[in-house]
Length: 69
Image (tube, rainbow, N blue to C red; front, side, top):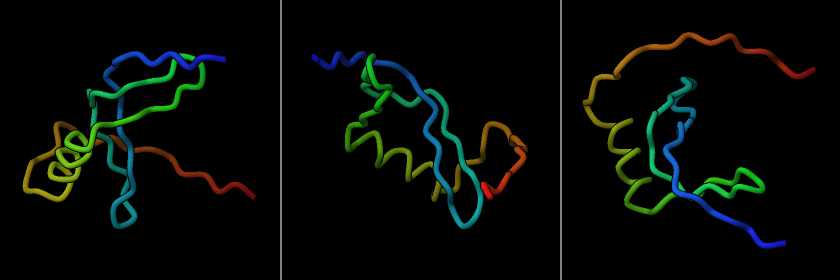
């Protein structure tokens, strides 16, 4: 099985101090077979600068949280 990667823009999601943070339109290499996303080191650095910097978010999204029990 050969993995095929394609350049795409994705939504990068992470949790920061109990808050869910989403960064839209992040460049990634995405495996077309598994959906695995790979990011260049400079892309990840830029994402973290956005999150921990002084930039204002484009918008705020509220989302429900469920516990798997």
